[in-house]
Image 1 (spheres, rainbow, N blue to C red):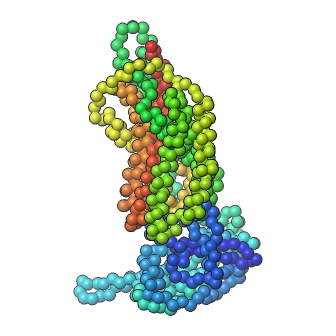
Image 2: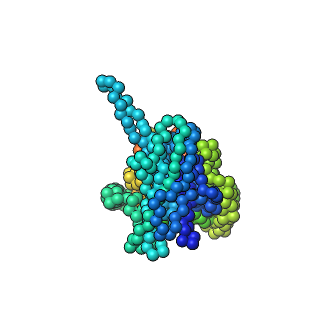
Image 3: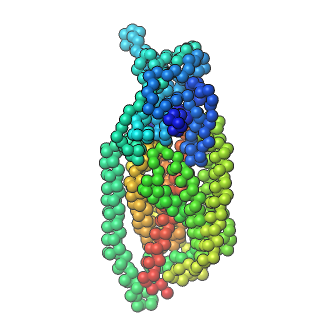
Length: 573
């Protein structure tokens, strides 16, 4: 039951939202009145924002009435006869650890539906039978702390150990339940602007902070070792080769290694339109992620607020201009002619699979009757944002990229006839190189993945945007360095088809992340059932695909800069 409170003539009114399971990493929510709680005289729904609907909120009026600074000992909500079906619903909710959630003056409050006790009966030697006794909480206690005319903190208590405040719903039989609540107001010195710090401290204890610091330290050490290795290699090998080829005065000297393929190195890749669209989509998502992290660092996303989801939609739509500009600009540099096809492909390369996945998973949520399903109003709002904001900005970016056409800068002339790539050993193939390329970047983020997954799919709140931003920067740098190293070894083997190879190897970290999803699902979470399984693997596939595009674009850009520097430093003709 999520409720929200408004101050109206010194009376605070709850809005009930949803019932959610407390099973670890279990995000399956239902409407509050799907359980047979007491109904108020007039049940009305609050008009929700897009962010609230994306967050699964379904706010309706609740029967709790709190008058400002007025204590209440015991207030009766209703006396209700629970049918066998009602008892079964409550027992099932208690068995799955469901709790009700409230928003009170935008402060989140939680309370369990009930609890169960294990009773042991001795039926003979070495034969002990365990029976669960399910108890439904019928009394809720609200302790409200205030400072002057501001609500600072709300504590939601259930007396599940009290016989008088619970009823037994173990058996399928009709029972009479009296639902009550009480209120106590207390003064606090805490200021209003610091009332959300409590939820941040609940998110991560000092022990968790040490884990994050160790994670960043380990990632920094990996980056330092990799940088030292590359600098050493440059000083001992690459610099010598550049000096040799730059000062070569013997015209008949045989060219070998990476110098031998300079005439084919900048031959444009196959499927130019798809390549430009992938690079544009990856760059778009990179700018989108950086923008969201910067907003988080600036404190725009307070815990348990719906601003986060609104920001995601708005920032994604606005940054679509980056996708249009990058894809069309690169495509025209690659001497492509059908730029509109590339532009539309860039717009749908990530959004298309995301939209299809959402359509399927939303249908699953509707079938199960959960609040995870977006209502028609939210879908219409998202469609309007895409049609009237994202799509025009995508077209604007593409038009700017087309009009600012420039030639592709290549330090070497390209031969008319393509050079055949020699047969390489198996470990130089695409798949082994992708496996190798993703190991180091994944080692940078795998510790953070657990906390991110716990925040998205569980009940934790991720507020350490500074840590996440630092890890993300380390991930980008290590991906770039690994891509440069693998590209050099590919060129040294006289393989000039590095365009797609660098992109795919850089994005392989996204495949590692999706592999980690299986470990997290089966060994670190309590999720089960078709709905939870489909939602987890479906949406995580979209996230990991986005990471694939982001890191692929970073890897290609890094390799391109390296190759241009390398061949600009020697005599190619």
